[in-house]
Image 1 (cartoon, rainbow, N blue to C red):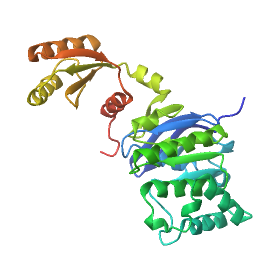
Image 2: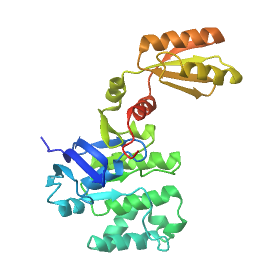
Image 3: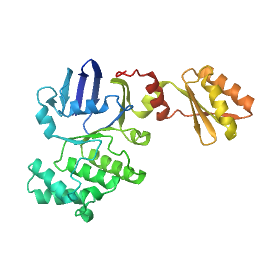
Image 4: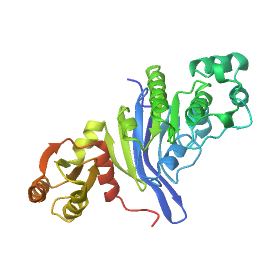
Length: 310
């Protein structure tokens, strides 16, 4: 069997007396798309930077692409494409000029042919003379992906790559990610979008430095052991008052309006159903059982985490 692309154990990173990554262990198989979820400030970016050799862990060990994480960081960097949260190219240079610069950094040869092929693969050829600073969010994202894949890396580390990008551009980006994974490239991607997480083969959830859940989306949802009900038939003025009653009711962990309905979630199924039916009956509303979503699990896990910077 092929060895995992990433196999790290017990990663720790501290800044002063604050532990921002606390005993994180992750395994990512070759050719797998692994989602990395968690609230802002949870340690996702720090973990990614440790795995691509940009940061040295204070504790822990492991391998990335077969290289020792602690002793062979430079070799890891050469095999990794890292796409940061922020657009980090020269905005007063064109697309092709930016890619020529990156090709020079990687000493790719012949650079002109490599850049031309990359432009073609990412659909950038017709725009190659356009200044990077004038690109929309979706085209900037495509340029960033082109730059971090042109040296043919074995591993892509994508840190919230689609923030601020419209839904069509996000879908096209994910189609490209699946195309790359089908070629054997391993992808670790952090995201806040639940629909993107559902396009990953597996996901990890990290909260304030601690890994709290891992597995396929159905496994993570099932592991949360949440029950969900939807209350329908509410008037707009009644909805807020009923939501406030439910928040204080036994068994209720989450209440959220969705259009003209209330989405109610809890861990104690019996207490939750009793509370929901009692409040709904008093309001003359209907109750329907519903599937728990990944977003419900995300919110629940956030509520269980403790801010490590507080």
